[in-house]
Length: 391
Image (cartoon, rainbow, N blue to C red; front, top):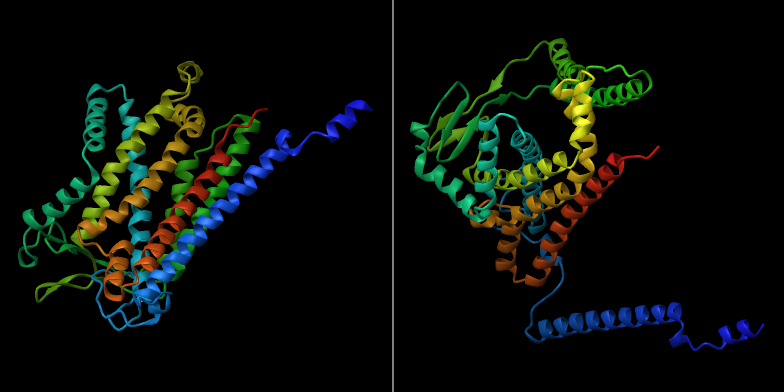
């Protein structure tokens, strides 16, 4: 009874739980007051200098062109649409860059551990050189390579029909628009879903029976076969939209600008070197005894890597891999140095024309925060799905 009375009379500043809550409330109030002071001070200064604030400028006419746009855009469109074009360009180069970076990084990381001396040393040289050259210098190198080393459009390199390489970029042919293309795309998505289900079924079957199923080749056959079958059923349309030289540049097909290619090459080559090191470290973290045990029961090296090593290495590879994906997305903001119209470039032009610097910087921060958090959420989900489950 005496103990309970003494506990009730303990002052709150001596109670660690109550004291922790008090400190958190005080910290929250201090941060809130600081934020209020900064916002209020900014608004007062803007009013004093007769500078309008708000995002109303996004509905005004942009009055500037954007050299590369995945959607229709003209100078008569609004600033909001111009910023959307910049965001889509950033998303495009980041998405393609992450996919290519994963393929190259995994390949080089595995090659780094090859028993072939030449392959291992070449992978090591690639990693050491590309990691230690600043990415901005790599962007300048690839950009200068296009403009200084490649010929003009009239003397463009034409290795085969439908492909032209010049200092204006790379022009290549694409299939001409056809109503069957949407069904082919649906068939591709369906093939990917079926491949995913086959992989899950094969994993359960192997756990229950120990029998291996050729998942890779079956998935490839389904993923490629369904679109080809759909294409053949649609009459096998083979008409191509080929680029042709008209005036000073190529028209038709698809044109990839030197800025886009230089940015993509710089981001992929630089980041893939770090991904390769993460893959190497993850594989080497798996006990060598498990590899030897798998080989001793007759598994091929490819099966050992796919069934024994990589599933365990993933839990080590995914966290640094997530960081490299985020770095690639954020490093894409360096596109402004070589003139690629990403979100930062378009936002800077908008700021210069409207004077809405605070709003422009806030939009840049919000854009990259959205991309980074989306990537982080997906990779954290994948990391949770890939972790080892104790039995």
